[in-house]
Amino acid sequence: ATGGCTATMIDATAGSVRQQVSRLLRESLHVSLQPVAELDPSVVDVEPLVAICNPRFGDYQCNNAMGIWSKIRGKPSSYRNPNSIGQAIVANLPASTLIESATVAGPGFVNLVLSTSYIAQRLDQMLIQGIGSWAPVLPIQRALVDFSSPNIAKEMHVGHLRSTIIGDSLARMLEYCHVEVLRRNHVGDWGTQFGMLIEYLFEEFPNWEEIGEQAIGDLQAFYKAAKQKFDADPAFKEKAQQAVVRLQGGEQRYHVAWESICDISRREFDLVYKRLNVTLEEKGESFYNPYIPAVLEKLSEKGLIEESDGAKVIRIEGVEYPLIVVKRDGGYNYASTDLAACWYRLNVERAEWLVYVTDIGQAQHFDMWFKAVKRAGWLPVNDNDYPKAKHVGFGLVLGADGKRFRTRSSEVVRLIELLDEAKSRSMQGLVERGREGEWTAEELEHAAEALGYGAIKYADLKNNRLTNYIFNFDQMLDVRGNTAVYLLYAHARIRSIIRRSGKNIEELKQIGTITLDHENERQLGLHLVQFAEIVEDALAEFYPNILCEYLYNLSEVFTKFYSNCTVIGSEQETSRLLICEATSTVMRECFKLLGITPLERL
Ligand code: ARG
Image 1: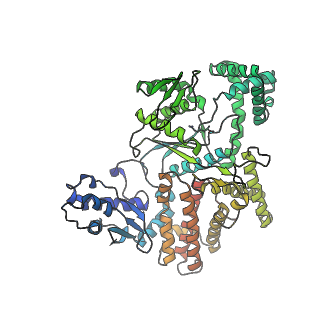
Image 2: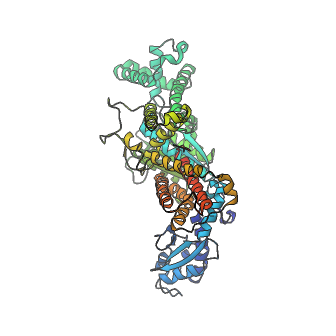
Image 3: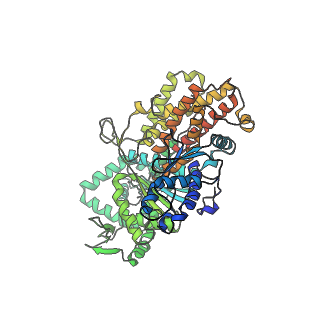
């Protein structure tokens, strides 16, 4: 797929099954609505409404008839009721190998049954061309996902972990759809805290340049000590405030100290990213600092910026407090940085979709500046048009007590320790299941990481992101229930079926074809070919839990197939092995999009 946005550029077989069904319905609607075009011109370009159907009636349903009827009822037309519109939609469907039958029910619902051989062909084709050939077509080329984004010298907490996990998964889904993704780490590296840290470094370690980073040692402890001094000692506070000015004024010594503090933090963050296998490209707040004056000037020219109490602000309709963009002391803040970053991302990086992944506590911040830049004409007023900006908010991670997740001594949980504990618990589980004797040390290590980190990611992603969830190791590492561990086992079991058959699956892919005669074969086949539209749905409003639910259901549908359809030694062995292969391929892609590493055996 090219990611082009005009219908003529799109190959008729590209995209998800639903996109193809929609294409047929769009054509049919176009013809069906010609006779009533003069009655209400808005019906002519109506977009097909396609939904998954109750399986008793079909595979997909087209729900346009009622809406069209409400526009033309009472006006003279050849349509007597919504049902007659449904009949026309069926009659005008272009001939295609996709659809087996189309029927109208009640007030014009059009129920479509996909052709079983089409489903089978689509599976065959995917096995040869790869699952990338199923990718949905999105109307953009480049997106920017702003995620993780911890603050230098402050702790990276579970909120940042959520942002990292959710943001990475969304980036992976966009990448699957052939969108280029700028994976942006908007680290907080430019706050007033640096004055305090630098001044503390200078005062407590006059020889800091020689002993280097040993002076700082543990950055969190260093931060605490500096903060203590800052709160207790007014003279120090004064100097710390001057230090910010000197740093921002570009004074060499201050800049060097700032760099080395950032480096220490960065190395800590990287340990987390490495374990999670997440890539990010850092452009911290400091990067945008030089752009702020000109960007504010542009907003000023549009008449957005007002003076208020010595500060500069943007008033937002419907919000009591204005958005402050220059503080009373002349300094810039979080909002001014986000405005400059937005300008940069749209005009220099040319991203068409800006996605911000933070906790829901920041919803209003984003809402306010999104409105501001819409007023400035940087983003279109119509939310369906590109470029778009979207805040992807998420809830809290809670401890067993239902309160914010903390350690027993009510400290912030160190992410590295959390991840390491997940891994060591998984390792223990593997040892208990006797894998130590069977596998090499590297294999064990690899599996323990896949299980442990996968469990943490899946436990997060399977929830609707807006809700809070309780962090519970026992639950997320359970081999039963809706967990990554269960799903990784389910996948490994399918791999072992294929291995046990003794057949060369690569060869079968070339010579064999899939047939879906048994009811459970067809059900599984249908579920598999719907993978691409699930990715579309998950991306529509950025809910990774939609993909998790799909994956979990897939394992259930597979189980049903496997208990009712003999694979090895059956007459349909080749086809059924290919169905197993297709299932494991789709499962693997789900894992990949969730950032989880699948295992061949467990
Ligand atoms: N550093 C911020 C925090 O820890 C998150 C930044 C999110 N990105 C943005 N462009 N504002 O809360």
